[in-house]
Amino acid sequence: MSPPPDNDDTQAYDETGDPVAKDAEDAERDPRDEPTGPRVGSDGREIVVPFRLYKAVTVFSTLAAVIAYLIGFTLIDAATLQISFVRTAIVYLLNSAGLYPSDDLLVAALAITGIGFLVAGTAVYVLGTRFRGQGMGKPQGDSSET
Image (cartoon, rainbow, N blue to C red; front, side, top):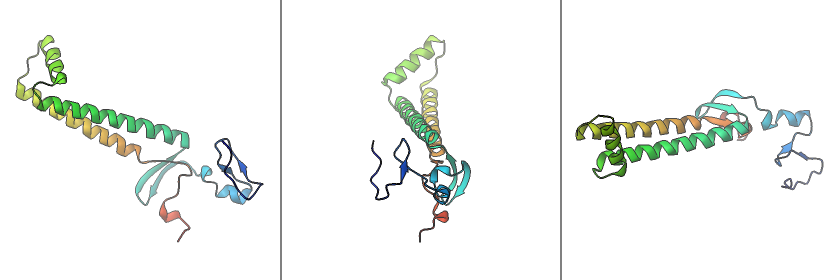
């Protein structure tokens, strides 16, 4: 990957193609030097972390949320359909363990568990969006643009 074109030939670039600060004044404005930790921004509380950690948090929180949504909707589907494969498997496992729940109890348990997975997936996703990588932009209150 070649560095972005620039009219200034003295500009240095790191291995990712991002410009590197040339002097002390430019280093002060280098967004990668932004301190990490919790911040209170215009959109509420956010946590500034190194960019690699931000990418990992974003990927895994989104993955966990999607899996939780799929499980939640599958359980809700099993609660509403009498011929669902998942419901049949759950009833078989419960019966083999010596438990024989009534249909009403099974529907309630599956529906509540499904809704619980949906709520948990939403919470994971919302918490994952609170992270911001270093240099990803400042809150509008800190911006010098008008």
